[in-house]
Length: 110
Image: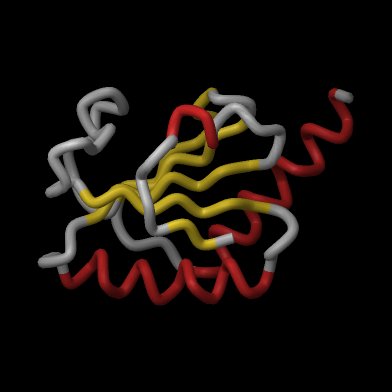
């Protein structure tokens, strides 16, 4: 799922699916590029991960809570806790590998 709304972000993070919180800005070229890659990720792994886009220019954003200092920043979240952080544009294969790695890890810990 590709969620462009920030509403109920805290509630969304409590579900048992992996989340990828994407902190970005509409004026940033790297963010625009990253969003295109995330569209591909959501198509490739639709049942594995929810992608939550957070615009840092929105007055209700969570960037202070997550100590965001650069855009794009992506936070992989499991059960409400950040388990991996990416700063800067990440390629599709890097993100797919990270998602699959953490999915396998969670299976082993279950």
